[in-house]
Amino acid sequence: MASGAAPAPRGLIATMALAAGTPLVLLLALFGAGVLPLAPALLGGAMVLTWAAGLAYLWRRDLETLAADLARLRRARDAEAAALSRRAGREAEILALLPDPLILLDAEGAALRANPAAGRLFGDDLPALLRHPALRGAIGRVVASGAAESVALAIAVPLPRALEATVLPLPGAGPERAVAVIADRTQAEAVERMRADFVANVSHELRNPLASLIGFIDTLRGAAADDPAAQARFLAIMAEQGARMSRLIDDLLALSRIEANEHQPPAERIDLAALLARARAGFEPRLSAGGPRLALDLAAPLPQVAADADQIMQVLQNLLENALKYGAEGGEIRLSAEPVAAGGAPWPGRAGVVFAVADRGPGIAPEHLPRLTERFYRVDKGRSRAMGGTGLGLAIVKHIISRHRGLLRIESAEGQGTVVRVFLPAA
Ligand SMILES: Nc1ncnc2c1ncn2[C@@H]1O[C@H](COP(=O)(O)OP(=O)(O)O)[C@@H](O)[C@H]1O
Ligand SMILES: [Mg+2]
Image (cartoon, rainbow, N blue to C red; front, side, top):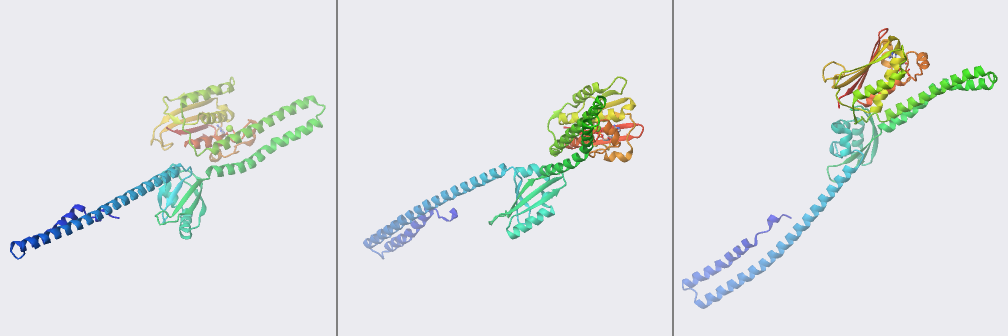
């Protein structure tokens, strides 16, 4: 109800005065002209005044009740509006509290509102997500049919993710026609895949050492039962096979742990120079006299990087171990690090730190280079096994660096040695 429609009481009283004034002036004029004698004129005037006063009184009372009614209605309307906005605020709060991304959509599938979880997960990529053909199709069907629907979505940018979107219809006359609740299934699917891979890889890699253990156990029980010299020799081999199986399982578990949180970059700031020095010191005892030297070459100061110190230490250990196992003939292993500026050289092209492990060993033939980071890929299986390798070292390195949003580059020339470079972006 519009309050402007009610006339001001004062204006009405003025109208009343005018209405009463006109007959009074007429009576006065008639009296003045001598047409009307005094007594009837006074009587007529009194009647008009009484009539006007009575009428004014009644109208005023009506107006007052009207004003009171209006005020009451206005108060009720304000209270209702306040309750509504309290409820809207409460709904926004609940939306903000929900941990899953939630998007309110119009009939065309455009986002009207998204909760903070959606903002955190998709940021500027939300419009791109809503253009996904599978999601668009589901929204169209849900708006048309009024029945909820779930779709699986695979998105590639900014990171590969497996999503499940549940689209629910919203009844009512508002512009919101549907709501999409998005569940991030990336981690769950990665775990499922890893479990399947784990079983396949492990059974394959464990078969040989296990077969050899079983064979030796049979021999110890039978043919070698009374041969202490053979027993000692077989037990040494068995211990080595057991250790190999245990290393393999350690590496597989490390790999699956890294993969499980690969899409979550580390936040901790680390002092890379100190870490490199620690890695070198830890490696020192493994360098035998007369074997290769390990040189450390740091271009100080290095910019800060956001990194997981344990994982970067693991990268350094794996690379140094490879240099020692496959490149020791060259005599020198060099661990170096330098800051890099944005733009500069084509690789890495971003600001951060590049650290490298270089050896002067026999190197790697170019056809192997692209495959070195695959699980269980070795150039020379026999040699890798003889050296205690699992074939997982560089796969672990690759996944750790990918979690750090860094880059890995392996350069090698046969007969000249190998350089493995790792780029970590500046924090
Ligand atoms: N510095 C290096 N020089 C020569 N070959 C290397 C070097 N680093 C790695 N390789 C090759 O890459 C393969 C994969 O390495 P890695 O993933 O660490 O597995 P592992 O060392 O357990 O065999 C090795 O088996 C080896 O053939
Ligand atoms: Mg290795």
